[in-house]
Length: 219
Image (cartoon, rainbow, N blue to C red; front, side, top):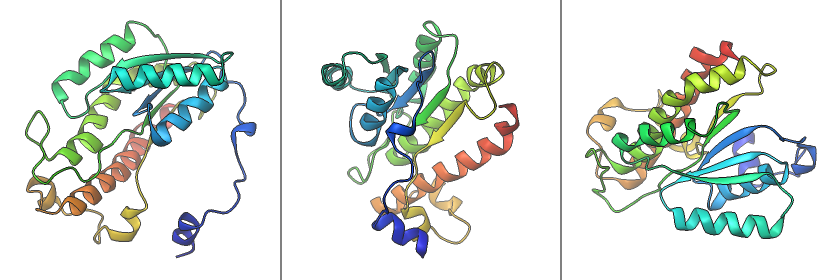
Protein backbone atom coordinates (compact mmCIF):
# COMPACT_ATOMS: atom_id res chain seq x y z
CA UNK A 1 0.00 0.00 0.00
CA UNK A 2 2.92 2.31 0.72
CA UNK A 3 4.12 2.01 -2.87
CA UNK A 4 0.68 2.99 -4.18
CA UNK A 5 0.41 5.92 -1.79
CA UNK A 6 3.76 7.30 -2.93
CA UNK A 7 2.59 7.17 -6.56
CA UNK A 8 -0.54 9.18 -5.80
CA UNK A 9 1.42 11.62 -3.62
CA UNK A 10 5.06 11.51 -4.82
CA UNK A 11 7.72 12.59 -2.31
CA UNK A 12 10.47 15.03 -3.26
CA UNK A 13 12.75 13.44 -5.87
CA UNK A 14 16.13 12.09 -4.81
CA UNK A 15 17.39 12.05 -8.42
CA UNK A 16 16.73 14.72 -11.04
CA UNK A 17 18.16 16.17 -14.23
CA UNK A 18 21.07 17.77 -12.39
CA UNK A 19 22.28 14.28 -11.45
CA UNK A 20 22.41 13.10 -15.08
CA UNK A 21 25.91 13.17 -16.55
CA UNK A 22 26.67 14.15 -20.13
CA UNK A 23 25.23 11.75 -22.70
CA UNK A 24 27.45 13.02 -25.48
CA UNK A 25 28.15 10.25 -27.99
CA UNK A 26 25.19 8.12 -26.93
CA UNK A 27 22.17 7.26 -29.08
CA UNK A 28 18.61 6.91 -27.79
CA UNK A 29 15.20 6.04 -29.23
CA UNK A 30 12.12 7.34 -27.42
CA UNK A 31 8.81 6.12 -28.84
CA UNK A 32 6.01 8.65 -28.44
CA UNK A 33 8.59 11.33 -27.72
CA UNK A 34 6.64 14.28 -29.12
CA UNK A 35 4.30 14.68 -26.13
CA UNK A 36 3.77 13.85 -22.47
CA UNK A 37 6.37 11.89 -20.51
CA UNK A 38 8.25 11.03 -23.69
CA UNK A 39 8.67 14.69 -24.60
CA UNK A 40 10.02 15.57 -21.15
CA UNK A 41 12.52 12.72 -21.40
CA UNK A 42 13.64 13.85 -24.86
CA UNK A 43 14.20 17.36 -23.52
CA UNK A 44 16.47 16.08 -20.75
CA UNK A 45 18.47 13.81 -23.05
CA UNK A 46 18.89 16.57 -25.62
CA UNK A 47 20.12 19.03 -22.99
CA UNK A 48 22.64 16.37 -21.93
CA UNK A 49 24.08 16.24 -25.48
CA UNK A 50 22.53 12.91 -26.53
CA UNK A 51 21.54 11.96 -30.07
CA UNK A 52 17.81 11.27 -29.75
CA UNK A 53 15.36 9.71 -32.20
CA UNK A 54 11.71 10.59 -31.64
CA UNK A 55 9.86 7.55 -32.98
CA UNK A 56 6.19 7.91 -33.79
CA UNK A 57 3.37 8.16 -36.31
CA UNK A 58 3.19 11.92 -36.82
CA UNK A 59 6.15 13.61 -38.45
CA UNK A 60 4.41 16.97 -38.04
CA UNK A 61 4.16 16.61 -34.25
CA UNK A 62 7.73 15.36 -33.98
CA UNK A 63 9.09 18.23 -36.09
CA UNK A 64 7.19 20.74 -33.97
CA UNK A 65 8.56 19.16 -30.79
CA UNK A 66 12.09 19.30 -32.21
CA UNK A 67 11.70 22.97 -33.10
CA UNK A 68 10.35 23.84 -29.64
CA UNK A 69 13.10 21.91 -27.83
CA UNK A 70 15.87 23.48 -29.88
CA UNK A 71 14.49 26.96 -29.26
CA UNK A 72 14.58 26.29 -25.51
CA UNK A 73 18.12 24.87 -25.55
CA UNK A 74 20.01 25.65 -28.78
CA UNK A 75 23.26 24.13 -27.49
CA UNK A 76 22.02 20.57 -26.94
CA UNK A 77 22.68 17.29 -28.71
CA UNK A 78 20.78 16.29 -31.84
CA UNK A 79 17.18 15.30 -32.57
CA UNK A 80 15.79 13.15 -35.38
CA UNK A 81 12.36 11.87 -36.36
CA UNK A 82 11.94 8.12 -36.92
CA UNK A 83 8.67 7.00 -38.56
CA UNK A 84 7.06 4.23 -36.50
CA UNK A 85 3.54 2.80 -36.59
CA UNK A 86 3.26 0.43 -33.66
CA UNK A 87 -0.25 -0.58 -34.69
CA UNK A 88 1.01 -1.99 -38.00
CA UNK A 89 3.41 -4.90 -37.51
CA UNK A 90 4.20 -5.05 -41.21
CA UNK A 91 5.71 -1.54 -41.14
CA UNK A 92 8.00 -1.90 -38.13
CA UNK A 93 10.91 -3.65 -39.84
CA UNK A 94 11.24 -0.71 -42.24
CA UNK A 95 11.53 1.67 -39.27
CA UNK A 96 14.31 -0.44 -37.78
CA UNK A 97 16.12 -0.61 -41.11
CA UNK A 98 15.89 3.17 -41.49
CA UNK A 99 17.43 3.62 -38.04
CA UNK A 100 20.19 1.09 -38.75
CA UNK A 101 21.06 2.89 -41.98
CA UNK A 102 21.99 5.93 -39.89
CA UNK A 103 23.37 4.49 -36.65
CA UNK A 104 25.79 1.72 -35.67
CA UNK A 105 24.98 1.91 -31.94
CA UNK A 106 21.91 2.16 -29.71
CA UNK A 107 22.42 2.79 -26.01
CA UNK A 108 18.81 2.90 -24.83
CA UNK A 109 15.33 2.23 -26.16
CA UNK A 110 12.39 3.73 -24.29
CA UNK A 111 9.13 1.97 -25.15
CA UNK A 112 7.05 4.92 -24.05
CA UNK A 113 4.37 5.26 -26.75
CA UNK A 114 0.91 3.91 -26.13
CA UNK A 115 -2.81 4.33 -26.62
CA UNK A 116 -5.43 4.42 -23.87
CA UNK A 117 -9.09 3.47 -24.19
CA UNK A 118 -9.83 4.18 -27.87
CA UNK A 119 -13.38 3.59 -29.10
CA UNK A 120 -14.53 0.05 -28.37
CA UNK A 121 -13.80 -2.21 -31.32
CA UNK A 122 -10.74 -0.27 -32.51
CA UNK A 123 -8.32 -2.61 -34.29
CA UNK A 124 -4.76 -2.54 -35.57
CA UNK A 125 -3.79 -3.02 -39.21
CA UNK A 126 -3.64 -6.76 -38.51
CA UNK A 127 -7.09 -6.82 -36.87
CA UNK A 128 -5.81 -7.03 -33.27
CA UNK A 129 -7.40 -5.10 -30.39
CA UNK A 130 -5.74 -1.70 -30.72
CA UNK A 131 -4.38 -1.28 -27.18
CA UNK A 132 -2.79 -4.73 -27.11
CA UNK A 133 -1.30 -4.17 -30.57
CA UNK A 134 0.05 -0.67 -29.92
CA UNK A 135 1.15 -1.07 -26.31
CA UNK A 136 2.52 -4.64 -26.43
CA UNK A 137 2.88 -6.40 -29.76
CA UNK A 138 4.31 -3.49 -31.74
CA UNK A 139 6.89 -2.57 -29.08
CA UNK A 140 7.79 -6.26 -28.68
CA UNK A 141 8.58 -6.59 -32.39
CA UNK A 142 10.41 -3.24 -32.46
CA UNK A 143 12.53 -4.27 -29.47
CA UNK A 144 13.23 -7.75 -30.85
CA UNK A 145 14.48 -6.35 -34.16
CA UNK A 146 16.70 -3.81 -32.37
CA UNK A 147 18.02 -6.28 -29.81
CA UNK A 148 21.11 -7.39 -31.81
CA UNK A 149 22.21 -3.75 -32.09
CA UNK A 150 21.53 -3.13 -28.40
CA UNK A 151 23.55 -6.20 -27.44
CA UNK A 152 26.41 -5.20 -29.74
CA UNK A 153 26.45 -1.75 -28.15
CA UNK A 154 26.40 -3.29 -24.68
CA UNK A 155 29.50 -5.28 -25.58
CA UNK A 156 31.40 -2.02 -26.12
CA UNK A 157 30.15 -0.11 -23.07
CA UNK A 158 30.21 -0.44 -19.30
CA UNK A 159 27.82 -2.99 -17.72
CA UNK A 160 24.28 -1.70 -17.26
CA UNK A 161 24.70 1.34 -19.50
CA UNK A 162 22.62 -0.11 -22.36
CA UNK A 163 18.93 -0.41 -21.55
CA UNK A 164 15.43 -1.17 -22.75
CA UNK A 165 12.77 0.63 -20.71
CA UNK A 166 9.07 -0.28 -20.83
CA UNK A 167 6.50 2.24 -19.61
CA UNK A 168 3.76 0.41 -17.73
CA UNK A 169 1.20 1.74 -15.23
CA UNK A 170 0.28 1.47 -11.58
CA UNK A 171 -3.08 0.16 -12.81
CA UNK A 172 -1.31 -3.21 -13.11
CA UNK A 173 -0.89 -3.33 -9.33
CA UNK A 174 -4.36 -1.96 -8.66
CA UNK A 175 -6.51 -3.92 -11.11
CA UNK A 176 -4.79 -6.91 -12.73
CA UNK A 177 -6.13 -10.37 -11.78
CA UNK A 178 -4.22 -13.00 -9.85
CA UNK A 179 -1.42 -14.20 -12.10
CA UNK A 180 -1.36 -10.88 -13.92
CA UNK A 181 -3.38 -11.62 -17.03
CA UNK A 182 -6.09 -13.94 -18.33
CA UNK A 183 -4.90 -15.41 -21.63
CA UNK A 184 -8.50 -15.90 -22.75
CA UNK A 185 -8.85 -12.11 -22.74
CA UNK A 186 -5.76 -11.77 -24.92
CA UNK A 187 -7.19 -14.09 -27.56
CA UNK A 188 -10.76 -12.83 -27.17
CA UNK A 189 -10.70 -9.23 -25.86
CA UNK A 190 -13.66 -8.33 -23.64
CA UNK A 191 -16.01 -5.52 -24.56
CA UNK A 192 -14.40 -3.35 -21.90
CA UNK A 193 -11.91 -0.64 -22.90
CA UNK A 194 -10.44 -0.35 -19.42
CA UNK A 195 -9.95 -4.10 -19.09
CA UNK A 196 -8.15 -4.19 -22.43
CA UNK A 197 -5.92 -1.31 -21.35
CA UNK A 198 -5.05 -3.13 -18.10
CA UNK A 199 -4.14 -6.23 -20.09
CA UNK A 200 -1.85 -4.24 -22.38
CA UNK A 201 -0.07 -2.57 -19.46
CA UNK A 202 0.30 -5.90 -17.67
CA UNK A 203 1.80 -7.19 -20.88
CA UNK A 204 4.42 -4.44 -20.69
CA UNK A 205 5.39 -5.65 -17.22
CA UNK A 206 5.76 -9.25 -18.40
CA UNK A 207 7.70 -8.26 -21.52
CA UNK A 208 10.12 -6.20 -19.46
CA UNK A 209 10.62 -8.96 -16.92
CA UNK A 210 11.13 -11.66 -19.55
CA UNK A 211 13.54 -9.55 -21.61
CA UNK A 212 15.61 -8.93 -18.48
CA UNK A 213 15.67 -12.67 -17.78
CA UNK A 214 16.69 -13.61 -21.31
CA UNK A 215 19.06 -10.79 -22.25
CA UNK A 216 20.10 -9.17 -18.96
CA UNK A 217 23.37 -11.08 -18.82
CA UNK A 218 24.36 -9.68 -22.22
CA UNK A 219 25.11 -6.26 -20.81
